[in-house]
Image (cartoon, rainbow, N blue to C red):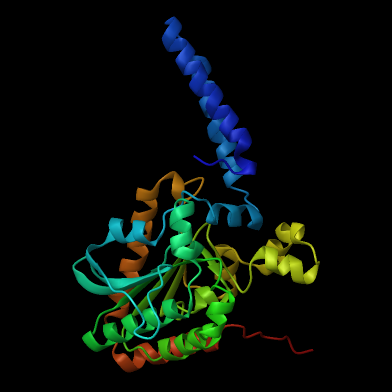
Length: 319
């Protein structure tokens, strides 16, 4: 398990407990009372640490290399997954997973960013940063879903759309802008969940949904903390301060009315118990899907349009 900087005291205490258990077993000594006290201390330390995480610490958890990715959720929550490839213009983007599957007996289209577990896979997946062909592929699958009357389930996990020269030459900004426009008009339920990083237009390019959920330790922001720090303070080391002012945590986004739901995670993050996390995601997505399937096309599209139009409204007190 990769240990984050603020988790070191927890890891050290866990190691001491394991060493004490091993010593007691080898020497055949009863140290159960001492072990119990240390385990109680460990539990209190965990609750204190994870119960008061700063925005920057939550960003670190959202980026944890062992955190479940889109394909993990597809495997855990769905059956009969068939992946579709290519945008029919340029090529296939491995950073964007698209296809059809069955979710709780309902046929659905599924779309999501996919990162890699090691260097080789990360290079293949471009670290979850999609090219224009990825967003065009996603839109193609959404339009297919509309044609066949299938709901769309989306998993968002990207630091941002790929900003390289090739991507810009092939129309990165236009591809994202087109998705924003067209997703408002897709006449089937769309449910999006931010499972890790929700970075800028790269996230929003598949994020125009009837219900937008964010995992407890995920983040959703117009820019990364490092990018914000570089612009505002000309210093990337100010990223923790940027994370604070960006209001990028699930709790902050819920207060601001940007998202619809905060999905709880196990103590320490989704990677600590992927099965429990998947069950929580399933419960949230299933609940929204049942509600949205009852709406007719017009009310669905009207609600979606109004949902995004009202974001950012501010009421000023008259003096």
